[in-house]
Image (cartoon, rainbow, N blue to C red; front, side):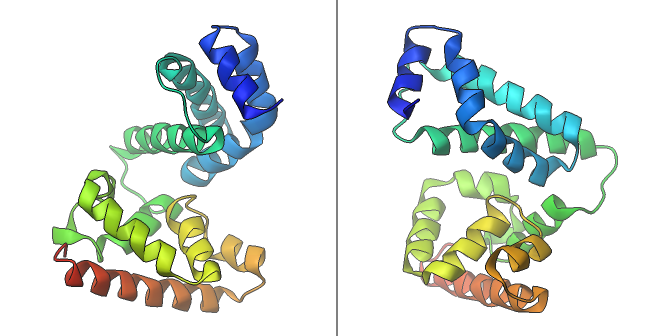
Amino acid sequence: MEDKEIIDLYFDRSETAISQTAVKYGNYCYHIAYNILSDREDSEESVNDTYLAAWNNMPPRRPNVLSAFLGKLTRYISLDRWKARTAYKRGGGEVALSLEELEECLPGGENPEKAFAKKELLRCINGFLEALPETERKVFVRRYWYLDSTQDIAQRFGFSQSKVTAMLHRIRGKLRKRLEKEGLQ
């Protein structure tokens, strides 16, 4: 089923919208949730919460790109679940590690989720990403949007893990310089 048809089902308040969303985007949303939560049950709950959030947001919102809309919902829901789960037990993991890596680039050591919400910072980062070579952009997005481990990224792109780590370090350095140039650091 095409995205437009699925969105129309949401606007018609047809419960088929959720089942069609699950068929087309269930694995995509689960992958995002699992990379953040590393737990099957929590990931499944986040995906179900994504369907509910989509139901509650359509109408009135009509997303331009359904996959991006669902991915964003899944990411925020999963990050909220991760924060709640780790509120009492601050531990490691890919989410903490990847967010910690980004903190060194962001203004004032601010929390990455809050910093990304600022429009000016978002504009600068988007411009930065558009200017990156395609492979570097994809590696950056896999690490800091999908929260993939460096090992997973290395396998996906056929690189060594050390190459991915070095590439990400260089990209963060470039990002830091760009933010400084724009007066956002």
